Image 1 (spheres, rainbow, N blue to C red):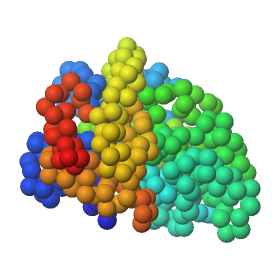
Image 2: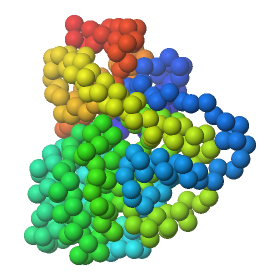
Image 3: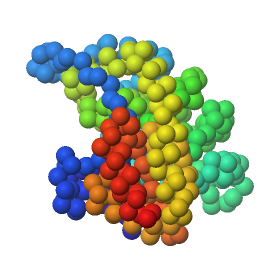
Image 4: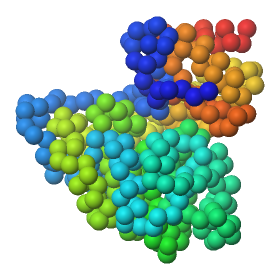
Length: 356
């Protein structure tokens, strides 16, 4: 069974469960509950056409590093456009993606032709599969382009920079691209591919929505060779980032004090976020599969995952089940605001119903 709506879609959840959109405890995303405090928005940001403010690119450079980049209205539009563009610039062979991960990548690449999948639950097994394909050890399992979600959402799996750079070198020899989605890497910025010199066949996607808790402003950055960025910019068109979003992002990306304090806070509360759920999940037959600073996932049978999702929703708690295969699912829990006693009570009341 698969849900027909994304995590965070409170309108669809409300239509199904008969609960107002404002009456949910939404734990179905990995968006930071403690969002960056939005600064005052000047009248110019509202009234003028949103041509790109050079200060936004300067802010992005100070936060992400000095690489050619393109600002866009979130990463979603770029994810949809990349397969066509990279097929134009590179080879036409199958793209490789994790068998479980942010599914918009799979949807976009599927529109362009064949795809292959590698293990999304175990980075060691995934590495072995990808290496075998790049070394031509398995006829019929050739890689054209490689998509990595690092860290993976919802499995939490990660790959080391050295490994990513090695794959990029091998892909370059066959005119293939390495696409790395780093939407959840802000809590560990030293693990980002942007700490390296980017090869011409590397594309890195970053989001302002997750760590900064600003999903509503719809802002992302793509880092790649200028030829890739030029084609993306032509497809996206002008005024792709609205004026208020630019104002907020300039402040957020340059506020190093807030960034440092938030990373520390998320790390410090990570165990408490897990402990809120783990005892009950283990009692029910589930095990912790991923623990990120912004989400945790428990692995279990599909029937249990959807039963818990359904029962939680009836209690006004929105979770995110993810199918792995016919016998396995993940149930992902985003962060709860631990300062909100009523929210914690709602969760504990529901858990008590599940584990009497």
